[in-house]
Picture 1 (cartoon, rainbow, N blue to C red):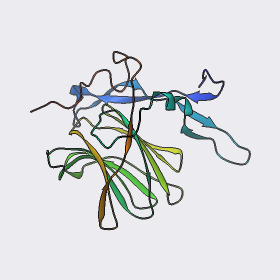
Picture 2: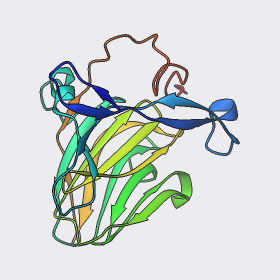
Picture 3: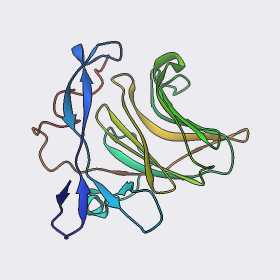
Picture 4: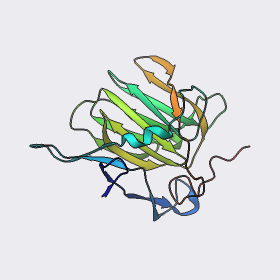
Length: 193
């Protein structure tokens, strides 16, 4: 835990990479993730939330494919949000976030679960952050899940819910230093065919 430039308390933590930078590699040395605000209120458990200091690094909304992005999705029932695909037509997700109310998960290629958690109550909003292979999910503003996915190609983010599918606008993230040792430093991104 450190004091951020704005005086707030933030938590810095690491998450493990995978050997060979593949979804099937063994976990190895950790990488620094994005800072999170530590919120401590009377009569409530401490929680981690989105740190507003990151907002200065976000670009204008777009519906174009981007590897480093933040997107906000309001949900009222079961959803699946596709972030990357294996195919040019976008029909086969390579990275997706799903939520059925209280259950939240991230899947990789062929729907393999990369991470999952059970929320304390049904979520009304999700905020998803991707930086290279790193994925973070916030439910109703509270940090809920993180994982890594080395598969797929950037695609417009789409949400499938209640029988319909629509594109989700995202805000690209401007990296302060592309050579830093964090979530985007080692993995060069998806290879082109």
